Image (cartoon, one colour):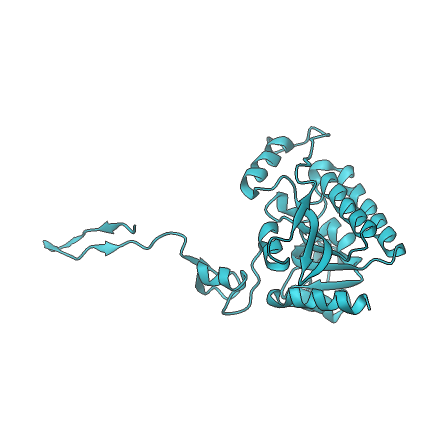
Length: 281
């Protein structure tokens, strides 16, 4: 129940003031409107004022994309080990993994499994931005390759939703090796005649962009998603050129031929189903 507080002014008692319950409102970072949280959730976590696409968890993404109760997760318990005894600013990699597992409810930065999208069976891999910013370590690489193998064995379209800060620095060269491994797995899928659709959400950057995110037979981006390799400031300082305001946005990438289409979140299910039907004719 909302708390009530009493106040006085010049000796007169005023009516109790109701405190605003926490968690009802949220601010859109794009248009800065104050929004009812429930209204944003009903709108698939998209701002009803400006269409800004909020970042969402892997489980929420699966709920929006897959048919109800159709997702069958595999390798759910696969966990990362701290092979390099990595520490950053006094925090060990092992501690960070446990903290993010508690925060996100996921054991790693990718969920994989078999699902149905509008009745079409698919192999589905979705990145979890709340686990070390969806970064790619060796477990993400292993899960990705397992999902590719399932797509090849069962002759399923392979759908990946990317949301990542790139290769995971805590694993050094081990994480960089996942770029080659995931790319090689996709080459096997291509040789088998499989369909690979990559969905790029905000952000898709670093080693993920430099590997499997940009290798799709069809590359779809959500509106306004940041897509790139190095950071904007690093690029500007390196090439000594003033970059366009929309640099590394989905719209910029579409204009320059790096993605095939931009699709609103509410239309993703229909568009993926349409592409599957078209490519399997």
